[in-house]
Length: 441
Image 1 (cartoon, rainbow, N blue to C red):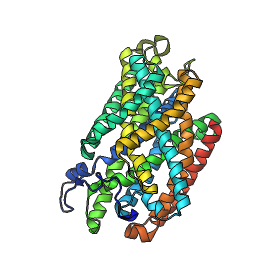
Image 2: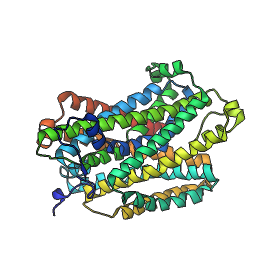
Image 3: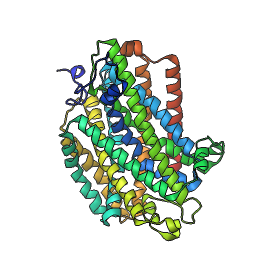
């Protein structure tokens, strides 16, 4: 079997039956196609997003809600292109790029994206270790080592099949959303001020510190592994590639699935920002870390009568859930990248163990160097965004150019305005990420 004949994520690809194109029930079709968007949405709720959203609220109250909304709208556009390359070409993004570039370029892109996948995994490790510290007062070093066990968590999930995994992830996302809705309801934010925060503010461009934080929010939102993942998961539905009507319908409902779950991700990030803005804005000890949120929610001196240990532990539990479910998506994305660029297949547990062991080496080295100081240790998440920022242009620009290629996309080739918009957005995101890298360093 040659490279071109191999399917993406074998065992998941083409495994979920969908209703006939002539089925009239919109809701039934939506449920059949719904699921991949949830797995992708998890990537928009990782600890990197948590940090930037909470920090945005604590420093500027609700002003940066508009930045969050704009970021998700950009994500919707990019994910729609990812869906299109997968559904129409029957290749995931890694496979599609590999067919168009030379072997040295393929290896270079694989290395860049492997680093990005490990950076994504790194944020999950740090987030999970911090959650275990919050919940059980477990030393960070042991929390980091325990994350090796999530290899078995992933294996346990995968034995249920992709459809049940999608359902589990949806339940997990809803659980996290409900937790933050409860917490925001507990602190009684001003609704009018929240709505005003969704109106773009010109000071975002003129205030340097506010601009830098806005760049961080955008940079933490669009990540390479989500683009690769969606281009493969979109092929999990069993549709006839030779039936134009069914291809059109698959694209339509895959995009509905993506939009709905990205809106949920937007709501959760907005709740985080609102939480930070309501209880930490104008405090003498401003929010600096996830640990400070955990302690602050139970500190009378910080939040006054709103202090509650229940709120603290709900926050920590939500962080733990997010870290665990992100393990599934980072494993799948890593497998897509390795198979697509190198044509190497590993069992999921082998892929998970390889990624996790390589990720743990720099985390443990840095941890011991800083004596696992919580604040410094948590800053690893911020620096992981740099690796993601470097890899992102090498994901977005090929995605845009491939979906603009009529030989590949046929009648579904990008319209001119889509290509122009895509290039402009990718260029802006690239410049923002360069600025983010410079400001972080």
